[in-house]
Image (tube, rainbow, N blue to C red; front, side):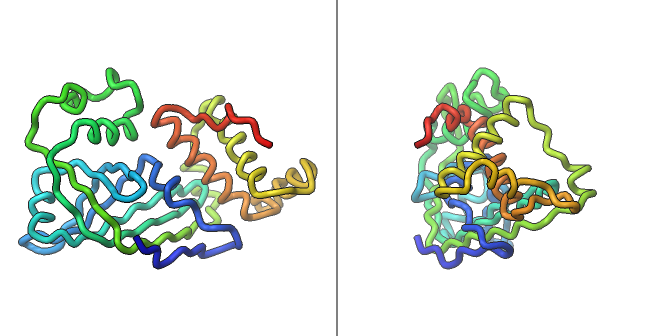
Length: 237
């Protein structure tokens, strides 16, 4: 896998972590060739560190058997915070027999760990009943990682405000501070609070903190959807 681009369009922060991004329960868009021309299929997926796994539907596996060349685009966007992160991949796909264990892994990313609470339409992943579905394993050859996050407008913050439970808010705060801690020594709590203070335009004194907070929220929500956030149980230092 060759990462051909890692870029941040604004600010001097580091680009986001690829594996953490691909752990979020996002839609991937699979672009492939059909007999009638290009097609795009929105899919759920699992990233194992080397390949993207997808449950094959009724049409695109046949297209991939005919022409395994394809591309995947994944975007995490939040109008309220200005979070705009994109991963694009080009490579080849292999159509394999249906794997119930992998299907359950994929569904747990999007539905959570309580299989009894899943929509009954997906019971085949739990019961192991035979189906006509397949698995698609996409191996990326070229990867683009772009952080195009921007300053949101007041309007978008008001109409798209993220609603968090008290527990999720606390965990987001902890994840945010943990990320600040791991970046290295700072000038203490006072310095951190100073950089977090809001300017008259509503933005933090250190503009990079807005993107840091968005990434912390995304990480907590992704973990909560797939078994629970455990970062707050770790002692730092």
